[in-house]
Image (tube, rainbow, N blue to C red; front, side):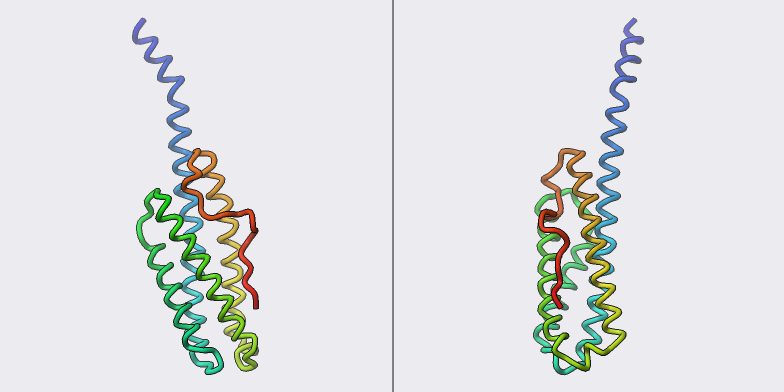
Amino acid sequence: MRLLRIIILSAFLLPFNIFGQEASSRLDSNWLKLMGPIKARCETINSLIKQLYKIKEIPAKELNSLAVLSDSLYASVQIKWKKDSTAINLLNNQNNGLTIALSNVYVFFESSVKASKNKKILDMIYRIEAYGNRIYLAKIEYNEACRDLNRMDLKFGDLSEGPPKVEF
């Protein structure tokens, strides 16, 4: 009889354990989906910076600032993920700071006739914008997984404002 109770109880509790593992695995998977485009965006921004250094009309100070932010975010993405709200908030703030610095560089880019006609630079800018959209969509999926696990402390940013807008 005792064995029967254990079997019945195990059969009842097993799906909850599997669901918890699946949800946690989904959270990890969505985190990787979020970090992929962030990493690619940083790499593309660094390539863009190298091209923009060649154009004297864009202040080196702005490009240096953008490079520091991009390198910092890239380094943070490389660190093994810990389910820690402080680290996640830091990553989100770095990502937002990079978007703002990118907007500042775009202001100078627009005013530079030489830069604004450079097809290679324009292609990189379009790729950076595409990565921004991918990041936004990945944030939605990741935050949904956080909600499903009842771990809103791990959410990545606030989605109420929509995708980040980079003005140029």
